[in-house]
Amino acid sequence: MSLPEVWLRGPLPNIPALLQPVAHALLQAREEIEQLMQDFPDDLLWEKPAGLASPGFHLQHMSGVLDRLFTYARGAALSEAQMQYLKAEGSPQSGFQTTAQLVQHLHESIEQALATLSAADEQHLTDHRDVGRAKLPSTVLGLYVHAAEHTMRHLGQLLVTVRIIRGQ
Image 1 (tube, rainbow, N blue to C red):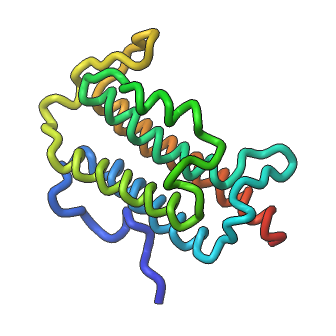
Image 2 (spheres, rainbow, N blue to C red; image 1 turned 30 degrees about the horizontal axis):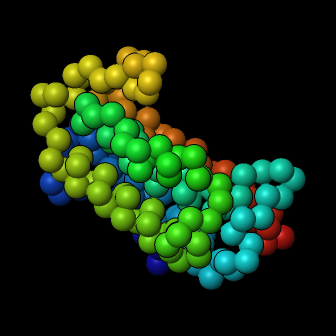
């Protein structure tokens, strides 16, 4: 018997009430990605059917977006390493060349995001945060919600791309 979606399994321990939907979305994405990418051939990881972004790009990008948005939520600027990771998204990077490595890296990124959410103070969720070089306005909560929403958006794109590649 399969489990219901994560959001229907009840509250997650140690996650503030207002951040439950963010954590639920990240955990749902993790589960679906791990299932989708199980046994996905490494030699197809960078395929771009019909000009779509490759599965490798989506996996890299989801990890990178979580890292970047949670950095902004802390009120910090991106590091040089984060900028280099961003520039390299879409091509194999040292240590992140196989499906298993990319899925594991995303798993770790989601775990780190969940740890941050569990330590979040709900009193500061509406605190202002600047985003990017242009210092566009957002809030801590806005960044967390966008991180979850963006992850789910790329999960959908990854799902379609993988099915096209597999001929399903």
